Image (cartoon, rainbow, N blue to C red; front, side, top):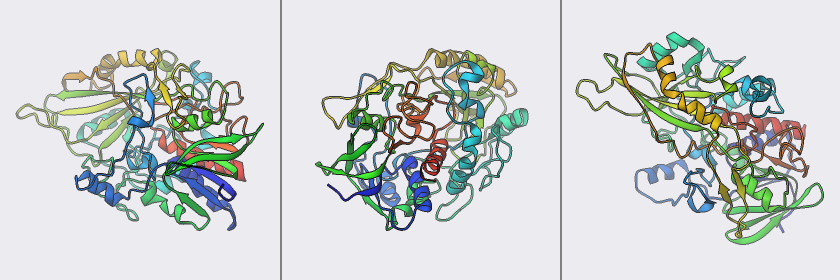
Length: 475
């Protein structure tokens, strides 16, 4: 068995890394931390070489890591930096009503924390990530974004003039100006591996925490579970290069993802019926609008704007809220003289977790099963309204025709709600500080703790939650 540690952390993605950054800042020089990373370290330069076809890093972002009854894909990068390597860098905050859906609209669940609880941690994450964003926002904000907003396209400018703070330049971790070792966004729309290293990643943003002398980082270590007593975890069990090992700590932090946080707890004998239940994410639908006598040009990033016209309001009593994303990927309209007379929008819908969608154990302790039976009728009712809502909210544009995809994206790249937070063990897996209800020295991080899945991208919020959880547990 490895030597005892003060803290053992699972994973090196957003949730784990922001927790660890805060922990190292508030702890003394004698603390000892073990970090267990399932994958390898593939530096940005190597990832670029793979993108150019020069090397093959054999990165498996889904596939054989789990089994499923569905054709839905649950995407993650099981290597150093986690999803920071493949995210697009979209960082809107949640709205206050997202955290009180039940008390405001009578659906879903309220979170056990408020927007005001999160607000100072939002501020800090935005500073660390050097977020580019606008002055006017639909969510409360007491401080300016560190970097100026990205430029809007001509179509975005028309919509912003109409809707004001309900249609904004997207807050994003794609730098609008060169900052530190990061260059300004090149608008090439190759964001999974940013060619100019503009997008915040764990490597280029806070990677130095893993060089701290107090931290031991081990690669190729898949955590299987924890040995537990009546109300604490006593050791962690993992495979290092296929060899079974274990280690002890005072505190254990699970920051894998929404699949493997639940799987680790299930392997540990967690018998809470909500552990693994509710796995879900948003549902995205693309629409293309074709214009008469309006060229859609300009814009300085892959996703130029977020529209909130369909997000919050009384409609959420009946159907899901929706965040609009205005895409600026390289595209042309395939009609002579009309090359840029079009827009591509994605409409991203929240969902309500269903306990019938779940992570389960298999006979192989390394591989979970995901049972997924589809998104909720609450979400589908909203999707069904999309054509009429486009006509309503985009009527100021000279639309010749529109095309709404029947195809639903197989993933939004956001794995949520498999270890939800709440007030009691009867309605959740962890408490408001992300501490496991039963095992008091286990913290569970990331979007797996979300009681509901809002229309907004989850990364900024889960990073803020990690900072908050660390403060509340250790101070």
